[in-house]
Length: 65
Image 1 (cartoon, one colour):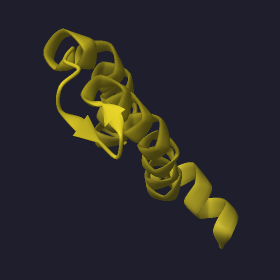
Image 2 (cartoon, helix red, strand yellow):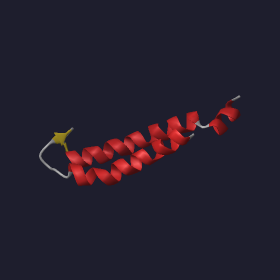
Image 3 (cartoon, helix red, strand yellow):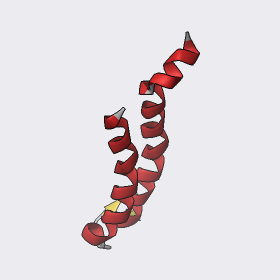
């Protein structure tokens, strides 16, 4: 479960650290500036990461059986 805690911190860290490294306008990703695309990508990835944490949580495994 310790690895799941680090997975939960990953989206928060990515959203908070992204502006320091990706604050540029010129590279466009899908028509959006790089920073906006980065934030949108992490907002979309966060529920997927939380689903992985849910599946690996031992408490939830007991409920499935």
